[in-house]
Length: 297
Image (cartoon, rainbow, N blue to C red; front, top):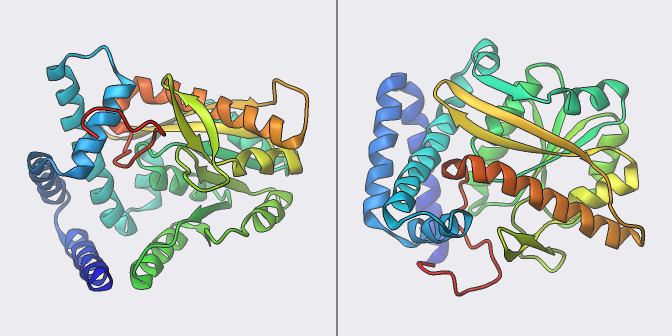
């Protein structure tokens, strides 16, 4: 039954993908805004999880204030999906003209120098839009994607991101050597890195609670010498804002693992800063903290 459900879900995604591409822009975004309201009103598991996550991010908010951010968060999440479905029709000019960046030199300087650069970022705003912006400038970008079920949907996302100009590696447990090779070629490695419940996930302090985040970006940086920076992507009325911080360097001496764990904590600290400024754009509708006592979970 789960396989049939996955197949049906994939077909709905693919049908929606085709329909939204041919709708007028304003109609498409109004449609997704309405779908977001329906999704919110159903108050399903994903909405409740987003609410509990945002409650940790902004504990001082009143119930009403928190709910306003949840509503904006669902709207932002559905805006991401509308963008995704319509993105293949965007011109290079539109991609470039809808992006604003701070500290862009943190990414461009090491790429120009041939050292490559690693960007760690949370599930915030539209990271595909951000990646397309740099691909449009001729900067080769490599990332990793978790396999989706069914395979047909996963291949659709691979095709979509490769059309943007990205090289996407399947997350199969053996990506670090390939990513190291790409860094040696001076490429940009972009990795979404705010959630990892695998055995290799590193425990960090995140909004005063324990969470687990991937160690891969930090290990890559230490092994290759490529700088590690973080990015926060958020929405604005006309597109996205990208804010870079870094480069990050270990604050401690010790083994590679100890230094890597320190870098992961620094990533978490930077994610926390960015998410605090734009909590509604953090699309974390899944469990993030190890503790299970968060209300509304």
